[in-house]
Structure formats: C-alpha cells, structure tokens
Image (cartoon, rainbow, N blue to C red; front, side, top):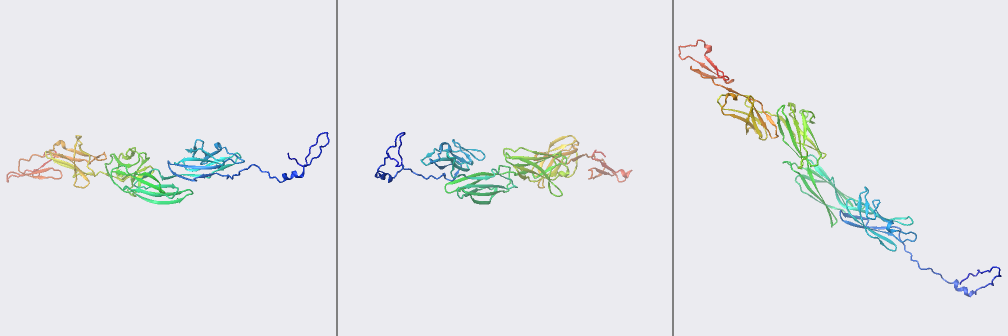
Length: 512
C-alpha cells in the first residue's frame, strides 16, 4: 500500500501514534512511474448520410435500386434503425410495407431490402419500379437519440417516356390537327418518324432540345393537314409511329392514330315545288362518341352572306345519332317553301369542338318544260304527253295522274337530248273522249321526295261528217276547227244566201 507522506492516523483518546517516515529511497520509484489506461480506438464517422445513384432513370415496367448509408453506433447518441430509419418519397414517409404516396396522394409500392449493419453504419436499399406515377425525389432519413436528424442526398426518380398532347388527334377537312411529343431521357434522345399516309400531309412545325438538371427534354410538334379526297363515307384515319432512341440499348415507341372527321356528302342540287315539302340532307363523318351540334345556314341573295336559318314552323332541323360507322346525318325540312326560299343552304357542324361546313346545297324551283300547256288530239288518233325535267340522276319512278278520273298509271322515263335532264312521257295509242282532261306528272327523285309537274291539258277533238255537196276544206289551226266551203253542182245555180255557203265544223262537239 502506498501512502501519501502527509497523511497519518490518530486514535481516539490515545496519544498520537509514533510518526513513521518511509525511507526516501522507497519513494523514488513511484515518482518516475507512467500510468496507462486500456487502449481506446477512435473512428471518425461523418455526421451525414450517403445515397446512390442520385439520378435514376428507367422505362416503364423496369426496376431500379437506390441505396443509402447513415452513421451508426455513435458515442454520445444511438440509432434504433428498425424504427428510426425511414425512406421519404415526395415528402412523405414510405411505410414499413413499402407503400408511399405521390403529391396527389396516389399510392406507390416500393420493395424494401433487409438492412446491413456494421460497427459504424447502416446500409439500406429500396427497389423502384418505374411508371408514370414514380417521378419525384427519394431519400432516407435517420433520427438519433439526441434528436439529431441526418438526411441522405436526394435521388431523382424519372421515367424515360414520350408523352403526346393531345391524347386524341382529330382533324377535319377545314381545320388542321397538331400533336406535340415531349420526351424525357437521361441523355440526348434521337427520334425516328414513320409517316406514310396519302390522306393527309404531315410536317414538323418545331423541334427543341432542352437540358434539365437531371436529363434532357425534347419537344417536337407535328401538323396534319387534309388532302382533298372524294368518295363514299368510310372510316378515314392514318397510323403514325413516333420512336425515340436513348443511348444504344433503349428505344421507346409511341403509336397513335390521326382520325379525319367532318367529311361531308350531300346532293349539290335539290329541286322543289313551291308549297310542297322539301328535305335537305347531308352526312358528316364523326367519331362514335363525338359531341355533335348542327346549325343550318342560308346564303343571302344580295350580300352573299351566310346567315342562320330561322327556327320557326317553316324549318325543322333533324339530326341522327352517330352510327357505329361514325356517320351522322343532318337534315333540314322545309314545310312549305316559297319563292324566297329558293336559295343556297349548308349545314355547319360542331364535331368534338371542331367546326366543319357541308358543301352548299342549291335549292331550285322545278321548271318542267312542255311543248304546250294544251294539246289537241282527234278522237281515234294516238297521243303523247311529255315533260322535260332537269335532274342529274334518273328518277326512281314516274307516274301520270288524270285529274278528272283520278286514275294513276306509270309513265315512261328517257334521257333527254339536253344534258342533265330527263323526259317523262305518257303514250296513248287510241284516244277516246274520256281521255280528255288535265294530266299531272309525279316524279319520285333520289332523295325520296316527289316532284309534281305543271298540269298538261289534253283536248279530244271530233270530226264532222263531210257535207254531201262538193266542197273545199279549210283548217283553223288555232282551234283545230275546220270548215267546208260548199258550191252548187251546176254552174247555172246560185246560193240564195251567199253568207251561208260555208260550213264550220266544231271539233269539240263534232257538229256544224
């Protein structure tokens, strides 16, 4: 036992103990001794986390892994890594089961690995499956017993993708269509365009490459214009392929269809009778789910301006539903057209917010031509009644109606010598008195309506018996009446009354 030289013990109620002084030689080794503690290993640990990679890119459906490392086993603070080490995605904690949320609270599922723990750090990995939802920042965060929080650097999750705006590319013959492609990639992308379509012309309006903090943005805009094409209404569309190549291994493709709607088909000329119903029809090519609004317009005679047809009892707008083939039929019913209604009309359609006008429809009064409004025919002779009507297509049917007997029989149809017109005729081989009267031709044309011609009158004439005495016959062309001038048989005979030597035959009655 070592004692301090100035310390000594005193017994109670006793004389002090004799003083004891160790020899000086015994103290010399103590004064020269070196005292050592056990060996302590000091390890420098940075008070920050690490994470890699910081820029994470992938095509939708592929996986990427992010790994973070944080300090562990510090001297003055501890880390319960099973609960105080978490992943943060877009500012919100990822649950222990790997569920995170986007900024709009859409759930995203991650795959968490087991933690690797060493004497100074904890390493943890998370697997990311790329999709349009998984775009944002991701980092890990550790909270120590002292309250200190260490965050790893942020990794930016990005999907290699090409987006198209708008989703549905629709055009009409009058309006162009635009499609914009935005490509996000870790390196500068190159594009391959495949466009082979005779229906429409395609041009690139703009192409711009822009460097981002963690990649590149390529924006290209295409314009689609209609090439005029005639024919029946069919589904009209063009397939288009837009491909992007990133590096040597990654290629993404965007296939889409440009649809042409709004093609119109209508009869350019509609013939009408004053006061009789007329139906105007036009057809538009639309998409099955298109929102359709139809407005009919009429062209002014003086200023040639198109104005909306008044919505009253004189006009009625009709519209069919969009068929499975994408056809919508628009009609305008004119209840009782007047002379002022003989004009040019067109339908204006709003198809999926795109405006399209039909080809003009010319409404004209039917001008049936006859050789004469009155035809005189002698009894027993043949007769032929006919009219000429301007039509582009042969009538579906023609009949003739006898007003007095209300008898209706089929009429013949032949092409007229005048281009763009047809002759409607009715032939009677042997004319009798009951054939006299007024005849009207009724022609059913292609649009399903009936055209009624002007009235043709047929007058049946009768011959008078020739007088027994010698005579000279004289015709009166205006009335088809005729007369006989009678002379005496002998030269020495004279008429008692010179004014009565002419006999006039009234062919209407067949008497003198």
